Image (tube, rainbow, N blue to C red; front, side, top):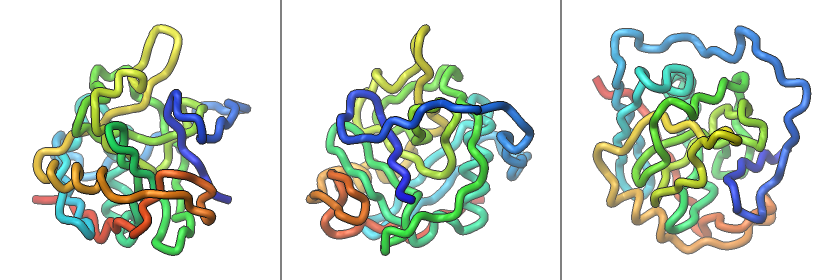
Length: 202
């Protein structure tokens, strides 16, 4: 089944009700690379390289979750399937053939950690259920204040930021997009933008 992750105020996205969700130990991914609070992950794409610094001090659950997928090679050979100029570049969930990749358990929402959805930040994509993030992530391409938490709403968890390659990300944000029948979605790059490899830098 195709999973559509959503952002507030974007019309085409699927709302998934929060039903029967409860906290259990599987919502906490194992600690990865425990001696490094701010690991840097290199994301090699078909349009150039991007490096992001994760903030495990503010977002330990989301950072460990992202690192687990990286270290397992699960992001290698995936695509950036949603590109919206001035908003987000999203990926990590599908192969070039639009096959959904393996998922670990949902993780807890950490959007109240003080990190904001500002340009160049990386955050977890999710359904309407605030605790439904798994493997998909997105880069903020503008100051997306609507994605931050408020007294009445959960936000989208930011867990790091771009430290090099912002020009690559900006180029990705400008690629031609259109409707994808396979995803039943707009804003899909006409020519796939590949995430070739993600690796932790020493």
